[in-house]
Length: 413
Image 1 (cartoon, rainbow, N blue to C red):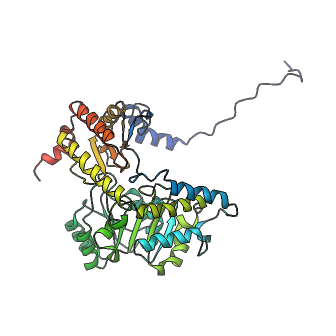
Image 2 (cartoon, helix red, strand yellow):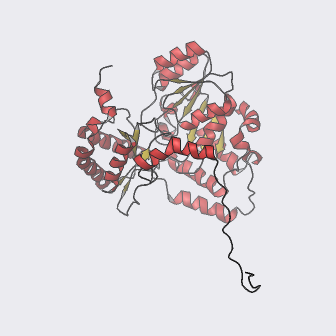
């Protein structure tokens, strides 16, 4: 039957481009069971929304910098006066630009020649390692080194050799076996709060002609004189070639940074792909970071409070039987083990107003999932008391003394 011209035919739904058969198979093979059986059809990091009275231990603003008047004023001023700014790759930022001024200020503060501002801590580690390692450079990484460091080694095509976590003796064996190269560690490990044994690690690197890279993401601003980090606290700054950091932790910004000898800058700017092929930070972001640097320099009271809060909360969790022996700093790892047990722990904490962050593979090893609690200087006595009360009430239900990590601790070596 002919359709009259005045009557429009139904518009067929547009065809949807289908995923390939191999990709669908991979999703089924690697993920579907995890999604349906362990996560219950809801993404693992998504619990309930925090209420106005929630105690938030799921962020990284260790010194409570967010919203600081000096930082906000600097950002607003840049927004009002930055109309001439051109968004472009960072390699086009001229010497003397606000970005380069901040790079030099931060590098000088850390006692280094030069540095580079990046889009994130991930980009900083990836872009630096891509340049300083190659297929002929063995790279020795602590087994708990941040994923961005492993990805940087992969981008460089360099051979990666893991050594046991915080085990200088094992590092020494690996270096003797594979030869001089690059040693890569975190100063404070992001999943456990453990402090690297930097003096021993640096000594091994020096004795065997290895360069040293230390990721200070979780110690920059919080440790050392004026917040200069763990390398500065231990007097190791001049003995470490590269210091990297995410500026999304104590600096509470959206950026990353690494130091470098001045002689490396021109070569790096031609070979570091994240720097070449990503846009630079915006003027108000750079202005905020510059203001934050000055705030952090004068934040001794906040650093002292952070460490006091850490000592208090850690002592309380240890007294309750939570196995948090693997760390000492402001990051507290509640390693329940399986994802099912970790989500049960998360849900119990959140239902009582305590919010941490779920970490699981690929952020941790399989079956070493955890709820990570990150402490900060702004926590009140009442908030910490609430966290302790909730954790104490949860203990008989989640039985932390039966977690795999607790059993490993009791097993003789």
